[in-house]
Amino acid sequence: MLRNLFYSVFATKHSDEWRLNIEKLSRYVDVFNARKIVVIRSDESTHDPAEVEKAFSAFKGVEFIHRRNNPVLGEVGGFIEDFAKLYSLRDDEMTFYAHTKGVKVGLRFIAPIRAWRDAMYWSCLHDVSPIEHALQTYACAGAFRALGIGAGRNKHGWHYSGTFWWVLHEPLFTAPNWDEIQNNRYGVENYLSDVFPRYRSFCTHFDGDFDLYAPSILVGCGTCGLVRTRAATWVEGHAGICTACGGYTDLADGKRVTRRAFRSLRRDKRRSDKART
Image (tube, rainbow, N blue to C red; front, side):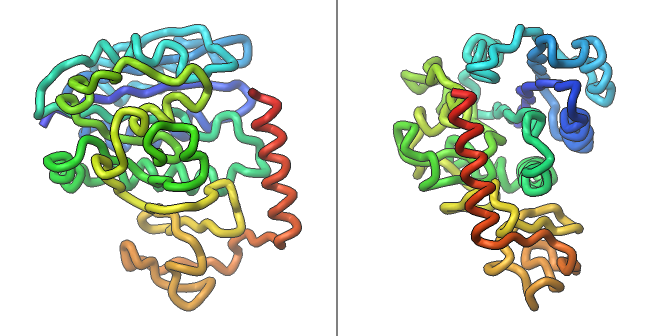
């Protein structure tokens, strides 16, 4: 199977999260045996693109695309044009899409975002053989398939929350609307769910309705990195065994918030989202 990389970078000066993302991605350099396209989006708030290119030193033969960042559209700007460079109708070719998750998030939300991000890299890349097997039946695969929150923004009522996914080329590029994307900042997150109904998608990890910005409900396993809800997945409360990998994790110091504090966090996020639209 040919496995491409299509990756979007926004290297903000106020945060090192973009470097942490690339470090995570670099652990899986051997996964990608075909083309590697990296889109670097820049403006006055970002590092020099040449510095960003150096961060990909672990990868050989990277094709860099430089774009002026559109603060309204973000990674949607130029997405179809850039993705089209990978166009093929091969049924043995797949592409992984991801981006530098968490670069615009403030410290108040960064802990759950990091756990979420780490889980997406791990579940999508640490072992691709189950994903290749799934793509014999399904058109796409990714982590955190949401069926409720935000799903009304797309055609088929689901999406990969966080936008880390694999897609098989033949079913995607034979779809009549593969070259269409919503002209808003949610466009890439909703891209596959506007093309494929839910039954053609495969979930690598964490399927259902959830709010991944809620620090009160998420924990990450120190062994495998997978994110779980505290109540549903951890044995013996705050010190237990990860049901995914069997590793022991001490959660005694995990962040907890009251319902009132959580509502405040959620309200602040909604206001921030509204201010960006």
